[in-house]
Length: 345
Image 1: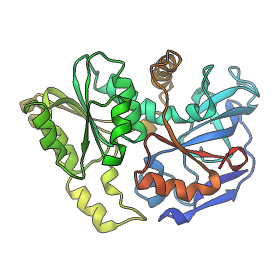
Image 2: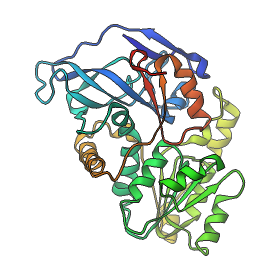
Image 3: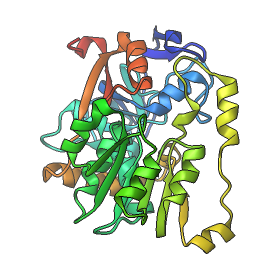
């Protein structure tokens, strides 16, 4: 089988489609023929050597895939060959086949296609966990979503729309404004032209917001904290500001690391605000938590309340182009990687 391989850390040119042995299931494993896998900013950071959880290069990354069960281990009871499934992978999803523990495989709901299935786990689980598990979003609250046009951002907009009266603020480039507003974001702020914090203060008459979803990091964490109303919650779930186009830029990385704010318990008490962090990759082993959230997402999908926005699909052989596309933040919604034999490109 073939898999997208990070030969060494660097620019998209380090990606290579390599041959690997066919995976064989152990007693509790499921082997899946991949029809689609998700590309996330975490994997872009991993390619640059800026994602601490990634395996050492050369490696195959990828947290999510959809496909058809090919083989099962001797003790697997929930699945059989031919089943359409979604897999939560601890890396390795950017391959034609993946071997995953049965506990991290979910049956795909009726009416969901493979592209939608691969687009759901990372983006929607992240947004769902932040909004409902960590921030405990309530009706009529205000939410700021950074990178609102990305996969997590678009998922968060849809999920917020399931709660009555939530007012949404999103940061994005001008080119994405129309689609983000159409998706349900009340205020789309072009962060390249104006200071988003000043604009939010203007729009809210200085009151600020209740929840900040921040994948930017560094000084933006401090700006988000300062925008919180009493009982407000800042949830950090990424550090996109570390990344510049291309490979690693050590001076830039060090500069961003030095801008990380320090929140003391005394500060949090004085302001009646909360700061939390989310790393979904570290929750992959907490099946009970994840399955409960995925079940809720499946229910919302079948009810027509959420639907993954697939921006673009790239063949495995076009992986470098996919990484550039995501790194340049051209996407509005999800970017997928499709094994060449199933790709329409």
